[in-house]
Length: 225
Image 1: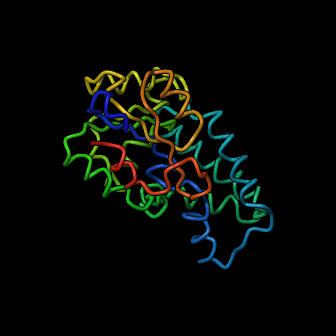
Image 2: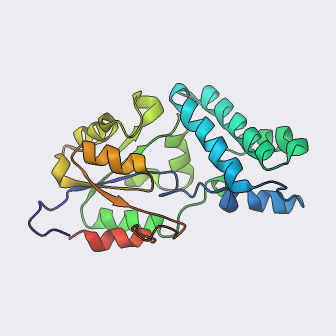
């Protein structure tokens, strides 16, 4: 931490693959195992393609009906891409019926403990996420909503990272200057968007594959006074 820099007053967080684990291994594979199903094609390639579809369409998902329709198609494409065509329709419908089940949205290890510790230290918190209209309720069911003073959700705001306006919305809502905030996220859009808004980014990798990134959310606490 640069001790010459202003003491951060706020911490902004990405959600997908930062606070909530997005990889299918954490939320879909257990469901498949319960049914004796295994992917027959590369699940990583299928996930990349399904998430590209989601990213391309999520800004239109401004209400729950549209958002749940988007997630159903996301799940269907993911399952088809994994070679589970025969089960894709039924399982995608089941996942949508269970969208408020916290098991569908597994938290990254240390997520709640980190938010709690930051709150106790007096930091203001905001989520800055490329997500659809379901995010406020999802954060509620996984037990994280109360930690945030603001949610900057791309589909509800009309702009997506790396557009710095999503970060500027959060900064304005919290009443802090860019140099008084840091942003924790896993993707290039987090780095580029935060830097464009004048916010210091902290790169996080929940899978431990990027040597330049934090691998434990609690590590955020070591970067802050």
